[in-house]
Image (cartoon, rainbow over all chains, first blue to last red; front, side, top):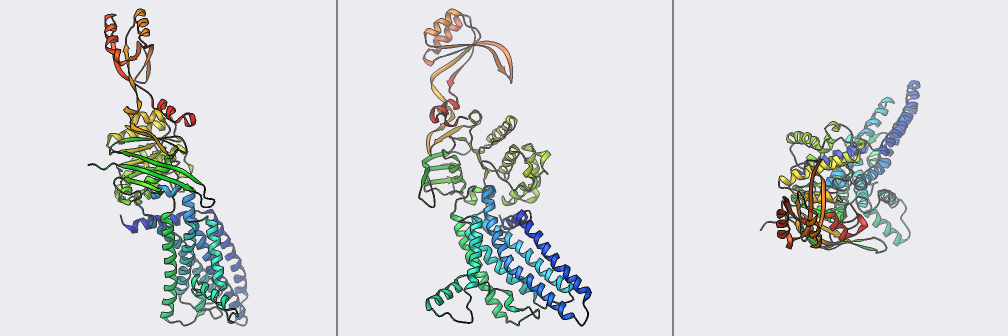
Length: 272
Length: 321
């Protein structure tokens, strides 16, 4: 049987489960509320905008786009981690995994299918956010001058890392623990980013540098590095830099995913 | 030499708690095998190790020790899983799907071509009596309906080996009969069936052999005929019996039971007869005396015990079916 059929079947099934997930529906509803709250002052401001006060409108639009970017960065990574942890644990908890694994499906194929289902969800999220930021900017009479592939690819690579970490931990521990662990890991990665002032203690500096290279550097993978939000335009960056950065991210995600597969291969499959 | 469909050799499994180090021995040197085309019952009280054994066979759990082969392959090997139909205990499905969609999902995973799957799925849904509920979401199914659906999905892809863990749990008597009929039809088609069940009377009707397990150890295994043999006793059924001969039979240690009604074709009909249970050594003598007394001998069979009696004797009252 073709690997592609198995992966597609499991991934689309996982995506279908997410779309019916109550927590995700609540998350989506809250999101719509926030967007509506953002749009209302925008529409009001647009009605009162003249050539003389255009700057105020621009500031507001850029603020909104910036907020969406942060939602893509922060909330998106947390969503990816939660979805990945939940994708495996829900199957274990309900016992549905037994029927699936009784089919000619290898364990790694199952996990990869689940992972792809999570990435499918996150792709929808990124596209939605991306479209929204353009819509809001358009409503405000502004333009987001950014290369769309960067705004789509960088978050996806970041989500791939967070999803892989959460999935790896979820093969060993409770999904909430997995999510919290991933959250702490993300916070840790942010804390160890080298600052302008070097650390005085050598041991602390080495530890910080070590962790900086070990933990998933979301700052390194952030599209903000290339986005000057004040002008809503991208800093010119060479292809080599993009290639190195994205390779680092994909490689990180792949290694963690392989660890998840290895851990999942040896775990007992039974109803939790 | 033909390869057994299932082979368990000295399989040992111990559950360990991650913290604290407490150990529970689930299986201890369990050995049995099931030949191709046989229907084997796997019996034992709750906690005996049945589900652990089945989980090991399916590759869900790893044994600590021992050799396990399923259709000649290691457990979990996709080459074996392609030829297996499995019904887990307390089957769980994606509740947002209906029966058709769920079976389509499993058909895809089983590698069935979509054009063949559509007909097969509607046939299977009809076979388990869910035709009227094919579009209803599984979340709204009763437990019995879910169990029927479990059996339908296990039959996808025409498997050679069926591993059924409590397939009739949650079913009403008619549902149980339907499952029994399905198992009998699969048996007639030459499928190998490994059936874990607590319904001993049904197991007795459909199985060729049984493995009885308790506290992680096999306590009896063999063909049903061997297991249920009670020695050399025979039952002789005659149409009449004189009182003098009855007294004489009692002196020989025989048990006499006068039967007024008999079950014929599911209906109780009045057929007076006499059932005599005696030692096989005296069967010829008894039959001759009956003929001399003018009685007709209707039938003579070796006396067999029931599986329930054997089970209770071996396992005790802890988990009566």
